[in-house]
Length: 299
Ligand SMILES: Nc1ncnc2c1ncn2[C@@H]1O[C@H](COP(=O)(O)OP(=O)(O)O)[C@@H](O)[C@H]1O
Ligand SMILES: [Mg+2]
Image 1: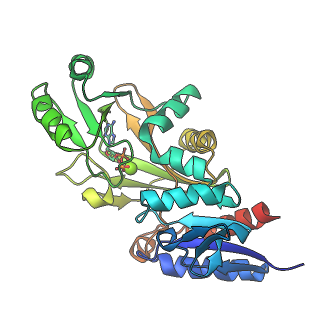
Image 2 (image 1 turned 60 degrees about the horizontal axis):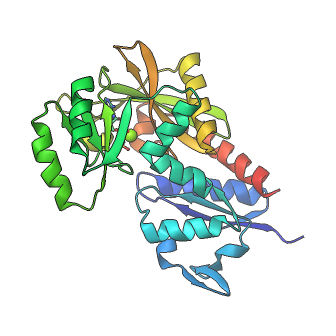
């Protein structure tokens, strides 16, 4: 029987290249070949297949897509197409769901998992926004598919609407997506889950100048332990979204005195070499679980 062959597209910054090599080596030990650098930006599709970097994507046994920073609409389109014929990790459906804050929150709430209060309406119904202000007092405008803390606006008074609406009219954004601001201590928990199993927990703390914990918003890594409740929430959230690999962000709501899921990331980063030095030591465990997962899926 011919060797199994998988394709991989992995981020290269922040130590990603070294992680990729480890994954490839461990897959090789199991006689699984790996094609790399499958950036679907350069894919060509025809009746012969979808050819990327001289590899026919439709003949792979599995495609492992792990590059958060460079996903464009055309790449997602190819990812979705490939997913119809080839096992993908994460599956395209789950990846797309995790990228959508509104749909993720609906799915989580339907399953009884606590999230922030959220609200979506067309930008031409600003009267709804005024109602939400009265109810929530402090809220956040977000892009449904935003990342890295970008494009969010903290709205603390009804007057701030006066600048939001003209701003939206200049952009192509038709939906207004709002979340109630959670009363929290500006720190969060990041729980990594692979194949339904708990991998690791660490946290991030916002800089004194920002309310967002994202590293790209000035936040910093903190070492912190999870408790059983947090791990259980993270596992359930991952399962509901159907993700094989997830990074679940959880904050503690001081007003309601409960943990809430802020978002579930489908491409959670490995620890960078700098982060490993300060104590995030989960990379090898995560690599091993991912290799097991891939091996299991192609058998
Ligand atoms: N509803 C909220 N209440 C309070 N803080 C929030 C809320 N939503 C997001 N934040 C803060 O903003 C950060 C980024 O929000 P998030 O929804 O995770 O978007 P992104 O995908 O850009 O990371 C969070 O890590 C958290 O610190
Ligand atoms: Mg986030």
